[in-house]
Image (tube, rainbow, N blue to C red; front, top):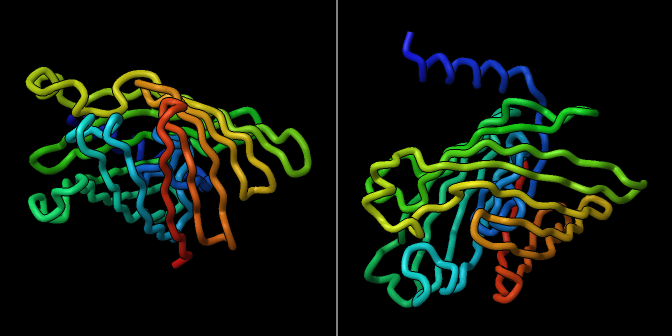
Length: 238
């Protein structure tokens, strides 16, 4: 039996036997902190639509000259599966690039969080298509520590790599994300207010997340603790 097929079967079996964990969207649409992915996925049947903005100095495609608007749809399907479809549109040249660079994210949870066990997932970004500017694969862990009645501390850590080393060598390294160690912490109050800090393999970021009416997700962040930006999204239970 093909070795990769065997690994896929193991991941699916682990995912089916685990239970769902909830997570909030990152600046780029997938569940996580600010730019670093977390080890939790969005809820089963939860559809989230939103957008975020990456300033020119930290943009992937045309940085540091032009920034990027990230439009996304994120769907939790079954208790262990999350898919995110994104369109990244570069500032001022939308008519030239049409709807923008299209990218997909597939995330599969293989372990659910328990008392002494963190949640764990594997993620694959931009694995199909021609450009694959945001291509990456990674594993991420998350653990929530309940400190008091309305307070909890979330700890996240992960490691990512590119799926094609030859392709990576042919292009500039900045065209890829999540290569190396990433992680962060979140301080949650009453389930709807979070103070977040993360490291996205390149820089540290800090921000605040707020969930309004259990539907609207607001994110205000300082990338590299110097560039103010943010995002907004709306979640609906199907």
